[in-house]
Length: 541
Picture 1: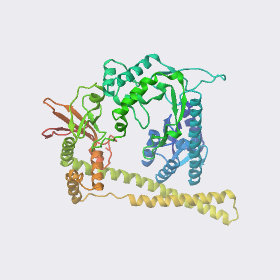
Picture 2 (picture 1 turned 180 degrees about the vertical axis):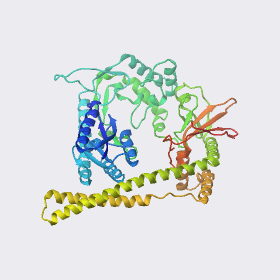
Picture 3 (picture 1 turned 135 degrees about the horizontal axis):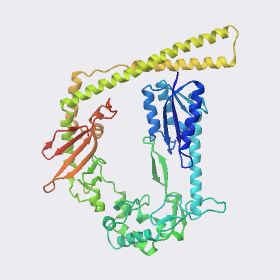
Picture 4 (picture 1 turned 60 degrees about the horizontal axis):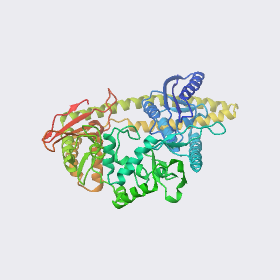
């Protein structure tokens, strides 16, 4: 009996949670008719089909397919699995390698033809949908309605049109929030910095637009994208549309914004949204220009080895560049909500962290653990490959018998169009299985670590710090290795002037990218890097 895994997805608020249950029900009925056993159900709710990267359900489906837990993926239609051409092709290729067929209620058994045609149709659908959405947003702006989210200082107005449909994008001024907007503009025009304004709002217990604490960047915004309080033209009664365009990053699957040139902007006057008068607005922007506001937004801070990984051990906020070579707690500096004012130099941070990593990685127990995990993982993969190979060999033998029976029938004069079509399908499936068997054979080898390899490992770890001072390619490789070992660095103040403790949270098994067999997670390690060196690592955190 074939084992089937069901997959269902819905993508927008216009659909319901019950949509997934409806898809499962239809798929279960089909599986029952075919005599298949449903062994798994995977789903992604309210997630777009334009990318597979950010969908946990489809990622788990692929993982289980590689483990040989089912033979068939059954879905309502191919676009439930993905609407992206590249994703559809990659999904088909990976599942076929795992010996898993894709079957949908709409297309039947999916083959290369479906992948090509449906992938193209789905890509065109997404492009047309995006154009229709932008056309609708543009129409709302022309009518004086908002085309985006809800800005601070306004509230949503619920009103129906003559057809009884809700009017989307209708806003009105929220006077309580509008007074905070005026306060921010007045204080900035009077000479206060965005950091001082944010700290004052936090001291007064005024919630930020997101309900948390105020940040200087929320007020300052971004000059290039014209975001933030001080660049929001809605406060002077102007609606600006098409300032940015959204594109999908193929590496991460996330949508990112890119600014459009000013000639593509759509600007409409909306006097009912005005909060700030022109005199105050001009005073604020004259000050920003006078004190180099434009240059400030265009200047890029230099990135250091552990950018994005350093956190405050007191409040959890990020440690960011304060000056050329010093890091400080962003909540202390930008918001005034954290008492941790300790700084650490970039070079000192790198030295202490690298020394701690080297000592931990060169510990005999760590090396032994790496070797044990590597061989255990290779054996597990080989077991899966052998199971797939036996299944494929049996299937090839069965296909061979079916082909011979059809050929014999044709030779006896019993030939139909259906028999010829079936013969071609079987021949194609046999070729695919033969290719997969060839690929599996090359993968079923446990590579034993030679003693010299272990010594090379020790040498490479010892040379990591030197590699950071080498040429570009070697430096990038060393930096990538080091960052893969560190998940978070915490800076904790200690007694004594300027003293800090550096706590490095890492996943040492990620050096060879092996999961823990029992828990499915990489072993975690926390290093306590004090002034004098490294304390013993604590495992299991």
